[in-house]
Image 1 (cartoon, helix red, strand yellow):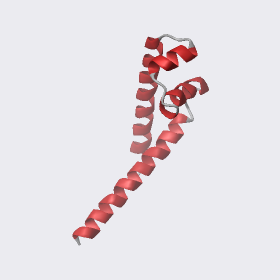
Image 2 (image 1 turned 180 degrees about the vertical axis):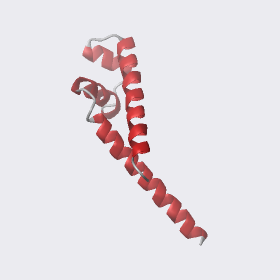
Image 3 (image 1 turned 90 degrees about the vertical axis):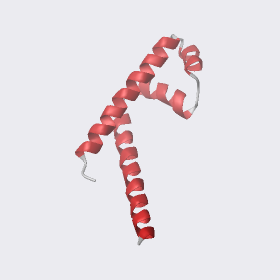
Image 4 (image 1 turned 30 degrees about the vertical axis):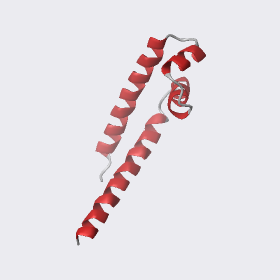
Length: 87
């Protein structure tokens, strides 16, 4: 009985994570290509903000500010999608 409760909680957590990932994927599709490229440099290629600034010939402040803003936009988008979809 306790095992089943733990199993059910784990299944719910996994489903919630999958819904979150799907929402994030949908939200990323709305991000302009140049900003997606910036996200890719940071999170896929694991470049530092300083490395990205140098590569894109932008200021470090621009890179950090842009990343911060897009993360906020994505967070709000995902939260909105998850709130709209029934569990």
